[in-house]
Image (cartoon, rainbow, N blue to C red):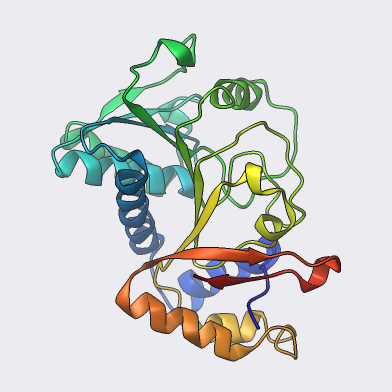
Length: 261
C-alpha cells in the first residue's frame, strides 16, 4: 500500500547507524541534502535570478542550508545566510561548511532584519533553522524567528518546518511553507499535521542504505505497510534523488501512509 512515517527517535538511530556503524560522514549526507535543497528552491522559485535567503540554526539542519547556499552561489546566483543565534553557536560540521561558503562569496548575517516585508520582492527563503530533533522549549530567539518567518509566503523548509514536532505533528510556530523537503524518509509528524503546515512534500535521497530502513522499521512491515513500497522508492531514487510525496490520511492515525507520485 504505502510507507509509514518515521519518528524522531527512529531517525536519530538511523543517523547513528550511518555514522558509527557504516562510517558514512555527516558531511556527505549534508552535501546531498544541500544539493537537493538548492535544486528544489530553484524549481519552486520559478525565477532563477531570485535572491535566496537561508535562515539557519546551529546544527546539521543549518549545515544543509549552508550547502544549498554554496550550490546556489556556485551556479552564479545570489544567496545570503542569516544566523539568528550567531555564527559562534554553530556546531563543528556546519561551521566547516560555513568556512567554505564564505570562500565562495556567500553573504553572512548574524541577526534577522527588523521586518521581513522590507526585503526584496524577488527574495526566496529557505527555512533551515530547526530539524527533526526539535522539542518545544522557551527560547526568545526562536520565537522571533517563528514570528519573522510566519510573514513570508515564499519559503521552503528543510527536513521539517521549524517548530513542528517530527513525531506528533504538533505545531509550535506559524510557518506555512510552499513546500517541505524531508531527508531520507518521511517523518511521522508530516503525515499527521495539516497540509498547510508543510505545503507540497518532497523526500530526498541522502545516501541512507535501504537495509537500515528494513531494520529500523522491522515491526512496521505488515498488511498495511509493505517492503515492496520501500523498494519502489529506492528504484525511483536511482532515476531522481528527489521525489514528490503523496500523503493518504486515515481516520486511524497509525494507518496514515505515504507514497511517491
